[in-house]
Length: 424
Image (cartoon, rainbow, N blue to C red):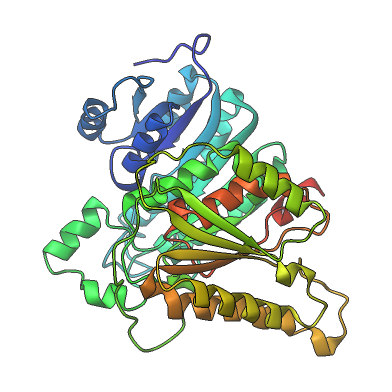
């Protein structure tokens, strides 16, 4: 069903939209009132998604295409509406195969074509439809950060996609280009593996600090944020949404979550501690006054603390500031809350004796994420540029501190760093 570009607002194009993360993201965007272009090779599954589409929201455009075929990519781009976001979510795994499997049969080539080559082809093909300031979001994987054996070239393809994302951000600084790295997600495929005994849930959870698998909706919240204008400070960066598994290096099994996550629409009850007076206090005060009514007003509040004492710490004392903030947070909350720290940007001209302080602080954050996760307690940090405009980071803070990011922990984000690289 074609979209009339002259009469519709800019749309979001989502590949791999018929199932799993793509389906959850499409439905989440629809509830926001966004116009969606849904792309998948599975026509019946797309029709089922269209049948489940919410009422009183823009009708989606449905495009069936095999994205391993460059001609089909070019064809689908011929009649697109203006796009303000492109979400490259479609992907293929090769479970059970070693790295060299499929080289002769073409299976490996098909995996690379979908996971690594199709995103670039889609960006080129859709470029005429992308509006100024458009967002490009590539769905990578934790497999792109560390080798996962017996999945063919999956890890290699996702590592390549992460690097491609960073390069595209530098090449097209007018766009916001980000990558998302999911961990274990309870998609339809994973659920079947659990039900048939091919996947041991205890083994999976033993390496996830938050003690639960992600639901597709957890990733949908992240993708909706990255597809929004508020993601601008993260251009050229990778957002890891994996329950903390990427920062966990222990050998002993981690405990399972002690209680379920709160609804993603829970209102944010934010407390600010030791915020620098210059710029940050006025921005946060105006933001808290102007915040919108939550999507689920009856939901329990999600408590969060934003602590800025490390941002004001003298060189060499960042670790102590982080520990003080963390200790105070733990005295206030036993479960279901988040601590977001503001850290100074990394300095390169410190005396060598002080050079380990910031790295120690970041590893302490990761370690606390692993220790606290089963209680539903999260800890993350932002290390913005010293000359940043705090108002540009408020949408990111709203996402990271609140219930929409309940599967994000142990991360230190450097917003603006990728933008600075892109503009050089």
